[in-house]
Image (cartoon, rainbow, N blue to C red; front, side):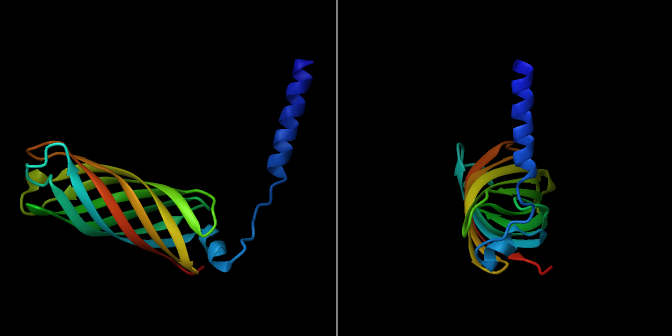
Length: 181
């Protein structure tokens, strides 16, 4: 009896998965473009406030600009490589990183999780070069076809240099452009 019930539940589950439409049609063209795979360019203004010990070099705050060139593989997943410029109170760092984003199924306002990780180069003193990770959560508003505005907040943690660990609460305001097919 248990085996038959298990097989029936498995068949119903698999049948409902197969019965789902492969290509969904959105209500508006801008949402339809958001769901399609393609190249993506994301430019973000970023700012952060230091946590913990903030009187060391490069630990009180920073602000800057980053840009990401990536590809949307599926309706929900984007992966890209980025570079930017972070101006700290006592120096300037150049972040080089990988970015991955997972967007939830939504309409014009799209919640997402993002994760960045890479290195921050300090050309004035290579001993201050750091490794960092930056998980974040945010919202993206679809403004028009292939264009979105996003806001996210996250926790940036970096290690390396003479005073090893630094952490920040950061905020990002970005513009996302999607290429034509």
